[in-house]
Image (tube, rainbow, N blue to C red):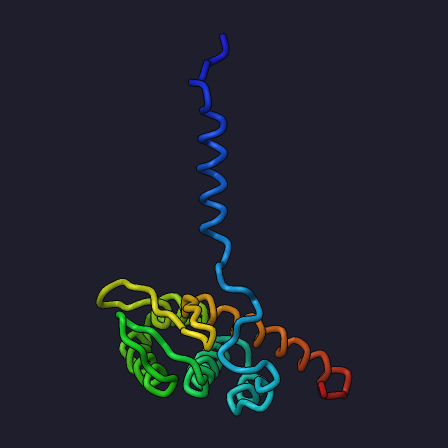
Length: 166
C-alpha cells in the first residue's frame, strides 16, 4: 500500500529544495571586482604567482595577491557596521591572517576563514560600491580568485606557446 502524504506536501518539498538552491547561488554578479580586470597582470603578486610552483607557496602568493587587490581598491569595506578604506581593510585582514596562518592552506581558506566575516561577531564583511550596493566580501573575493585563475591559465598557455597575452 502506497504511503499518502498530506495535500501540498510536494509543493512544500519543492519550495524547500528551491530555497536551498538559492542560498547556494552567489548573489554577487561575476563581473564585480575590487578594481579593473585589466590591472591583474600588472599586479606584482601576479608575476610571483606565475613564478611559484604549485602548492602552498603558490596559494600564499594568491593570498598576497588578494590582499593587494583589497589595498588598491577604491571601495569602502564594511566591517561590524563601520566603513574602512582598502588600505585599512588590507591591514586588518593581514593581521587576522597572520593569527590564523597555520589554518590557512589555500586562497579559498583565506576567503572563508579570514576575509569573509568577523570572527568576533560572525557578521559578514561587505564591500560598498559607488552605486551604494554592498556585496558580501567573500563573494567579491571569490570573483577575484576566479578571474585570477583564468588569467593564470591563459598566461600558462601563452607561455607554453611562446607568446604572452596582450
